[in-house]
Image 1 (cartoon, rainbow, N blue to C red):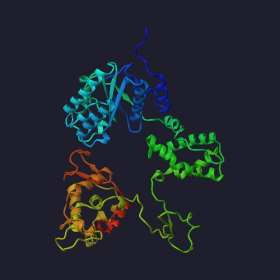
Image 2: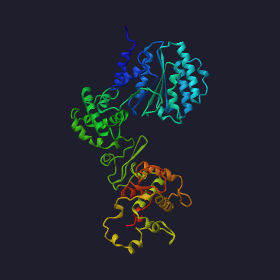
Image 3: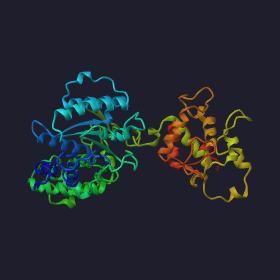
Length: 502
C-alpha cells in the first residue's frame, strides 16, 4: 500500500543547497504546505530579521507550484505589509494578489475593499470558484509578510485573517512575524515554525559559498584565497558581529568592506596569503573600531598627503578629484567638527535642556534664585555665585577638597530643570529660536524624549521610569560628565563653568 504522505525530495535538495543551514526549517515548511503531505490551515513563521523567513517561504512556494506542471496542486500569493500604508490598502492588495495568482476572469469586477467583511466576501467568491473548476485536492497559500508591523491595523485583523481558512476550503494562511504573542490568532492548534538566529558556524558556512566568496588574490591560488577568506570571516565575526553587524547582510557587508584593506599586504607582495597572523596584526585597527564601516568621505592624513602637498609650510591643501573636495586638517587642530560629536548631533532645544539638567544636578536648589533670577539687579549673576561664594564661606565649603562639577550628579525635580531652561533660554540661544519670553513650548517634550532615549537623562525615584515622562514632580539625573557638557555649552557660546557654584 502506497503512502499518501510524500514530499518532492529533489526540490527540497535544491532548496537546501540554495539556503544552507536551514534544512530543518525547509522540510518542516514543505510538510505543512504541500497538498500531498500534512497541510495546515494557519501557520506562524517567526524569527528575528535577516534569518531567511521570507526568502525561504517564497522560494519553496515557487518551487512547489512549478513542480506540478500545467495544473498545479498549489497556488500562492504573497502580500507584504511594508508596501501597504493603511488597512484598506492591505485588503485591496490582498484581493488583487489573489486574483493575479488565480488568473481570475472577474479581475475587472474587483472593486473597493475597505473592511474585513468585504475582504472575506471577495476571497470566498474567488477561491471557491477556483476549487470548483480545478482539482479539489489542490490548495491555495496566502502569505502575509511582516503583518505584525502593519500600519493602521484594526485590533481584530490577525484573528479575522486566521478565520478565513475555516470559511474557505483548501486555504492555508501563513503569517510571517518577528515575535508572536501567546494569543495572537485566538485560535487553537496553530503550528509555529521558528527560524533561529545564525550561529558563528552558520555564518562562516554561508559566507564561504558563492556569491560571497571573493575572486582570487594576486600571486595566490583560488584555494589559498578561499582558506584565507574563511579565517578572515571568522575574525570579522568575532570582532564586529555583536557591535556592528548582527545579521547576515550586515556581516557580509562588513567582510566586503574590510577585505581590500586586509589583503593589501598580499597584493603588495609584502605578505603571503598563508601568513594570517601577520595580516591580522597589520590590519588590527580595522577590527578594533566599527567606525571604519560607516560610509563617508575620509579626510587625508598628514602622512598620506605629504607627497601631494606642494608647499611645505602650507596649513591646508585641497585636491579636487571628480568634483569632491578633500581637505587636510590644520596642524593646530582646527578643522571640521567630528560627525560623532554630541553637540553636532543634538538639536538646539535638546542641548539647552541637557545643560540645564547638568546645572540642576550639580547646583544646590538654594542657589537658583541668585543665579537665574533678575528680581534684584535686573541681570543674572554668574561666575560661580560671585560675592556669595566669598562672603558666605562656611566650614563645610572651606574644607571641601573636590570641585562640585567633579562629584557625582544628584537627582532633581523636572519642574526645576524646566524653570532653569525657561530662565536662560533667551540668553543662551543666540539664534533666537525661542518665543518672545523664552517660555516652554511643545519642543521640550520631544527633546526630553530624545535625551531619555539616548540615556543622557535618567529617570530615578520610586517610579523607576514608569508613568508620565513629563510629570513635573518626577525626579531625573543627568547621565553625562563635565567634559561632554562643557563641549555642548561651548557649541552654543555658553561657558557652563560660569553657572556652577563651587
